[in-house]
Image (cartoon, rainbow, N blue to C red; front, side, top):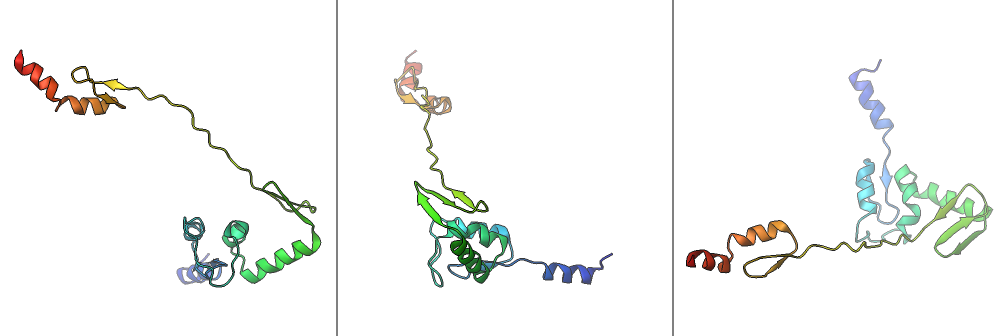
Amino acid sequence: MLYKNQYMVYNIINMVNHTCYRCNYTTNRKYNMENHLSRKNICNAENNDIELNLCKEYILKGVSYKEYKEIIDKQHSNNIVSVSNNNITTTNNNITTTNNNINNTNNNITKQNIECEYCNKLFKYKWCKTRHLKICKVKSDINTTQ
């Protein structure tokens, strides 16, 4: 059974610090590091100019940069790496990384052209036409003449 003080010490000891290899941004929250790594404008390379998508999984596991370099150096010394058509494969079966290009196909969604029966103005959505009918001048002219 853990008491309050023991529980706090246990959490502090087992916290994982995630550190960005490029800019040394450090946080103990994995979510914050995921946001940092997936930013539109990547961080400035103050320490190491490496691509974050290659080392992202190591950073999120909490591996330090020294440990990461040791792992990569071992892999490069033990394996022959071949790169072709955005596919990275190694001769050792432990690591296989593929980057597939996902083509987003836009389905041709035909939007209805909804027409105002008074002034023949076109709308994409029904609610736009309803909003327009409240202020349609042609409609109000027709209603006032009748």
